[in-house]
Amino acid sequence: MKKSLIVGLILLMMSCSKDSSSAFTPAEFDPTLEVFTDPFYDQVGPDAHPRDYWNLYKKDSRREGIEGLGQDWTTSIEWSTDNSVELSPDYAGYAIPCAYGTRTPPNVYVRISKDAWDNYSKVRRLILMYHEFGHAYNFYDHSEDVPNGQYPIMYPSLGVHLETTLKDFVEIKSQFFKGTFEGAQYLVCGAANAGFVRAKHTQCSH
Image (spheres, rainbow, N blue to C red):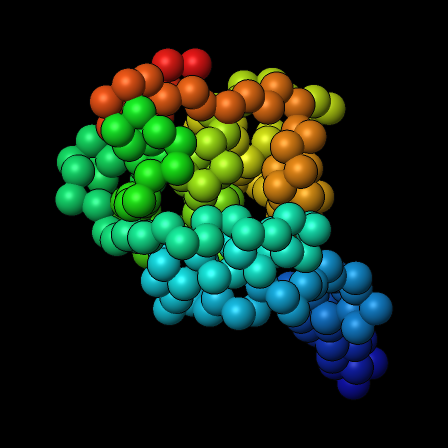
């Protein structure tokens, strides 16, 4: 009887050890796990407004060797009240890059869906804002080319970036600022045309 009790206790201890250890994986607490970080992007926290990303964008462009981006332009970056933006799963904002037939407008508008923003990760917010600034300040059109399976920032649907990491963003961002991403093309604004850019529709001729 005593022997049976000892064997039972040993089996119980083995069972508990097995159950508790299976709840964790080495990756969750391994101190040697490599995680890509870039403190530069810590300038925008979880409570940041979309307009906070404009200063980040200008600083980031200078890091890539591009000066004078958007200087002397009046910038309006606000929440969208457009239902077509609010209700769309793939498109969370729009920009007006063209005004009165010129590509150097006195006022540039960017509108962002607050509902989408509140549910976006930091990386998706970066991609969204750089995408809209790409329209408004770099005059980029959408690009649907996908070299090596890596979607460019100017790809028309944000849904493809669900798995994009910060490391991925930094890589495609460098090509974005230099205009060297696959399929890069530019908007050419027609006379007296306000030039909304929303989803796959553009009133600018290109």
